[in-house]
Length: 318
Ligand SMILES: Nc1ncnc2c1ncn2[C@@H]1O[C@H](COP(=O)(O)OP(=O)(O)OP(=O)(O)O)[C@@H](O)[C@H]1O
Ligand SMILES: [Mg+2]
View 1 (cartoon, rainbow, N blue to C red):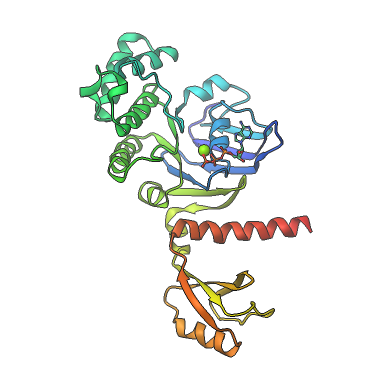
View 2: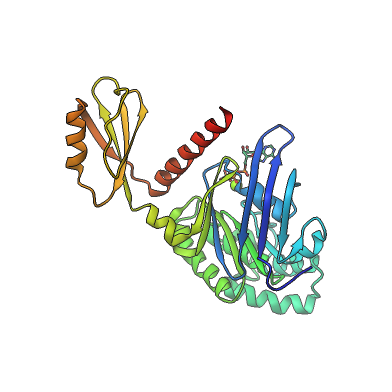
């Protein structure tokens, strides 16, 4: 079944345990609506590539359901595959082929007649600002051009869902911005896009919705805007003299926890006055030796969300 109201991607209770026993996905469910630009954000080893691998039939799932525009990947794998364009994490075209041939041969693999593929290749290579390189050996392309060629190739089959696994990993900000432009145009033309990234800035700039995945679970999801609102919180670490007291002071509106035996970790609204924090410390006999900001917003969010997750895991285990 391929109904027009179906989500572009529907994942239910997806689990993956690799042969070596690693539980890469521990029950992931998510919906991506047609036309959306969706980010899967997560640290190394979170399970992003595993999720994408299953959706694009490169990895076998252990259990759960996946459908693409209403087509279940178990019921009709080929039909589901035809709806997807995949840009894998590693560059994997033949460096000794020319961009034009790479695109045309790829389409041929999917059964697109050569005459049609040539027309399409010009379109996608122009879209990726690579038309002037169509006849050059791919090996001679710059890193950014190679990345754009990966995207162009995936667009050859006119996928309804384009999935990119860290398309901009390790490329400099200028190239990244150029790729963002290409991706925005593809999305504006009606292709649903899902990408994985480590960069909050990337998700922020491109995506309307996102899920944060960690240790094989989705720890947060929603519109980009509401997640950013969660970040309207400032974090500080305090090195304190002596040991952290057993009972920590309560500071209204803020969250104070012991990071370790001599470090306190505070999250507070940006608008809050630090004097209140110091007053509470003073009253509790806590002496601060030094303090620093928890700067990286994404990292900060991860830490907050994943420590919540670790808590939940401990509670489940207890
Ligand atoms: N083929 C495999 N065999 C065994 N374990 C694997 C395999 N592929 C991935 N894993 C493990 O599964 C977990 C999730 O890996 P995955 O590649 O999905 O993470 P990721 O979120 O894509 O990470 P990264 O940001 O580093 O690309 C990790 O613990 C990883 O070591
Ligand atoms: Mg990965």
